[in-house]
Length: 456
Ligand SMILES: [Zn+2]
Image 1 (tube, helix red, strand yellow):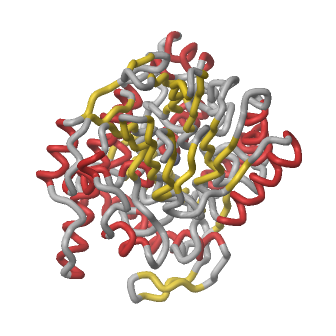
Image 2 (cartoon, rainbow, N blue to C red):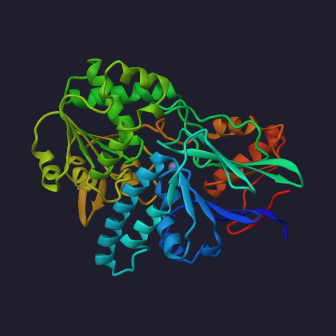
């Protein structure tokens, strides 16, 4: 049995559920422990025992605070893990908010479906007590290996981990990208380069597709907002709480301050996104040079005249009674629950209003039905006529596209022994693996679930 291996316990053949067990003898550690989301088997998978003994794992390294990377951490702790959890400070802060929200969602679900929760408040408290933070460009030594953090540019605080160790006296480097960002990002810095990886575990959500060009996304956004407000209707934007909401606020902030649009009421109607935005506000040092310049010139980039942060449910309900052009930003991003749904019930039948989809809409979600152009949609038992204008912009994805992923791998062509393509649908991952083999002549594979791969 080799002393060096990776077991792919989740996040293979699927975008979600990231969970990788690394052995660098005598230590065992995990990278990410996320929820499986959006499939019929998700609940069953998430409730299953881990395919390793959590008590035998020494550390957990968390790449970023999306639930498909952190959502099962409290379960790991409930099942016996008592090692140290590492991440950046921002990931730790946002993870706390995400766990609180998950507890609330589970409580509601439990009442409706009479299900046992995946974990409790006590498990979350214990989880947070095990957490320690590391900085970008910090190296930490664990005797048999060391770790170094690089900015992934995906969401605030997202990091790539470089693990260095020796096999038979030779230096080796194993790198996990986590999710890597779509650069340049409106707010964040670019993904840092990896130039000397021997083993690379890379994300592949968009392994088989490229995004629309970046210059078009901003133009499209400005046009849609202007058109919508000029028609006197309401612009409704379903938005993910982390990153997308902050990008939208930042874009509107600039449009209002540059006089591109008139100052209209803008409602941020998501308690979760509001809390996350507060973490963004405290983390200015992690923004790109362009945004830092704006902040240094005195701009509060997430705040502008007529922006309301909606807290109470009753205030959310009252927005529909406000006459005239306005913008509503609410969660959830795929319109599966959250305050966005009641806004859609109200504004979808209004031909003057606009629904703007700025994120991926999974099959089966309400967001996907709107995206697909259904003219009648059943929402909570009521048939809603769709007369509003529906637009979508895909360019604000926070994931690298196919060509950018290949470029990231190409920086390590000289040193790479093997690339493990993960965190994508089967079609997307296999396409990227083939593209890497064809273009770079580097070995690239899509590991099977729970398969064990030795490093040599
Ligand atoms: Zn992510």
